[in-house]
Length: 478
Ligand SMILES: Cc1ncc(COP(=O)(O)O)c(C=O)c1O
Image (cartoon, rainbow, N blue to C red; front, side):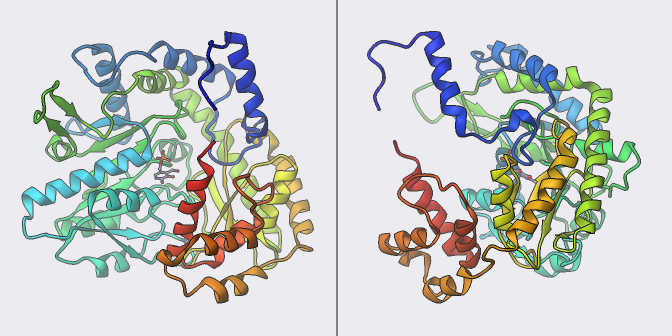
């Protein structure tokens, strides 16, 4: 494809975009149970307009665009107050959960470099439910993830396992509120106590749950403590583009005090151009996301968030009850918020997900890892709750239908043929062979995903990761 010789008209541009969208997941109808956080049309239009009105302002230089600085300071202040931080709590606005976690890990690493010079290979202890972005941050920043098992029933972090994993190189402990995979809050009080005893930093990943859990607690749900009221918590990440319903590109990273945040920042005067001073990873950045996030908090307000919380809480309870009542499905852990996952001992969950797709629902398959079997994840949205009964009826029907489909038959063949391979042995031939077994041809996206999920599920983790990288590497080309 080439840039058109003559630019298209405005109408042509939008017509094309609508055409491109045809195969996307139908989130606007509320039938998508992951990835999308939809506050409804009215709030969306306000957020969109605020975002678009700040599209061109550059958040790179707060002195040139003081309004961007002001919005950021206000969003951070509202977030800190929301998480019961005192006047010492500071933070930064970032592009998302991953950037917030990269900032938290960088702050911990550079804090250790200055204060614990004996640590040569820094480590962070990650319960196996900690988000993949910690691994990515560790990979980028040279901090070794030390993964420890979680409780096999509740899927909450096991504090004894965390304690046992601490070494003289440990610089950071991590807990989630909530974890993505199972939607549960880790025992943050106990982790805080451990961090204080061992003089370590503790980051709470509230990217998914930090915001809405406060409202769950206010409505009487039994939410374990996880915010700045917990002694020992030194930083918290909280995404606004998830359950604060801001437009994507919006998260905050908060620190108990500005001494720690200092280590997150970066300055460079070591070149011929303007001096670079970046609080976070990005440099030039649109002020659109901060304006969108500011507008979301202002427009929805506490009463709006409480209404959303009531809706998603009630729908979650209904879904949990339906899963508990279905002998083929098994809830994994007990959700503390409005995210949950369920497995099956009798049916392939990958086929259930495909069958649901045929009925125009999107539900998210998750692969087996450690004590968590392959499962289906649901994130429950205010705009989806009107579909709860219909979705549950289809889920029951799809589960029945999936009973007649193969379950786990590919796994032994895959393990026998490929299980022994090291990632570096994944030659083009092996790659194509694996994709062929998964029913994937060329670069087209497969209609059904059950086979590819089963192949991935059967492979050892390093090979899974390598296969996915190879696949992305062919997918992203014209
Ligand atoms: C608990 C948790 N942490 C971090 C992230 C990463 O956030 P993002 O996808 O915004 O980078 C997610 C994403 O779902 C999450 O659920």
